[in-house]
Length: 313
Image 1 (cartoon, helix red, strand yellow):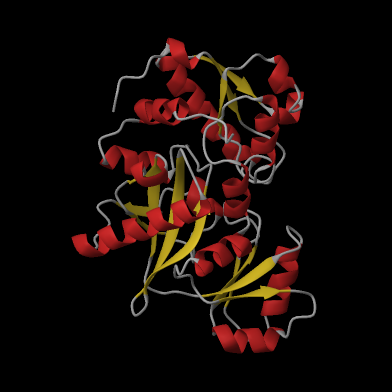
Image 2: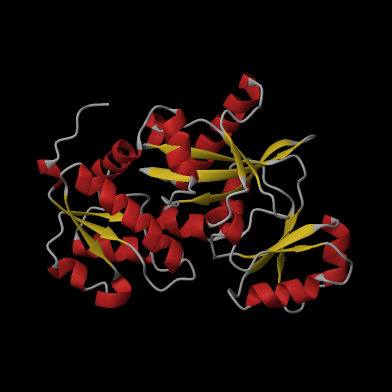
């Protein structure tokens, strides 16, 4: 890519922390991004809206911001909408793509409407026939809040009759709760950089958690989760998975960067699980790992993402 003019980036805010359930991880991601940009000579400053309030962003005089605020309030279109009103260019997807990406149910609906494959699922309510859902999806199955990330509130239901309790636990995090069929063929992730037809998929990573599933601890704190890159798939199958991830990214109108999580069904092939429009950038995170495999160092990755900052309109 073309050399990035550091001075042209101006005064930069790294927006991190916030009040979501993912605050701790956002602070770790933000600290890593801040350090990388400082090493490259960027005039960069940390900004935590939980401490200062969003309105202070405008007073801070930032020319652009790097959004690394995970979860609600940062990844769901609300921060993006505020930045649009303030006319401050920002990294990552715009208002609509961010909101759709955060809402797992409506994201699946968009993908299904475009003819893209997703695992079988049901939307749960207090009045759901939980026994019928267990029978329809089979056991085990996963239950998750529709609008949380980092596996917050996710549980695996293995025994008949346990779905209602899992629903009630997930409903403490969100009014919308999904039950999703278990897919046994492995979990993969595809990082994407860029926009539109110029977007590129980085090498696929296979995730092999030592725990029962890829939960919060396995994602951020355990050292026994295995990440395979190369992922071990035949080249044609990996390329197919990358094309599917790019299609999912483009359907939602994503830009800048994101990470698409995919389950591999041994009969149906790859199935889209979810998309992260402000992925983690910690020492356990997958986008930096995929970038390294593509020959992109962490500092360069942060600069590329920052240089892509813009407004929707």
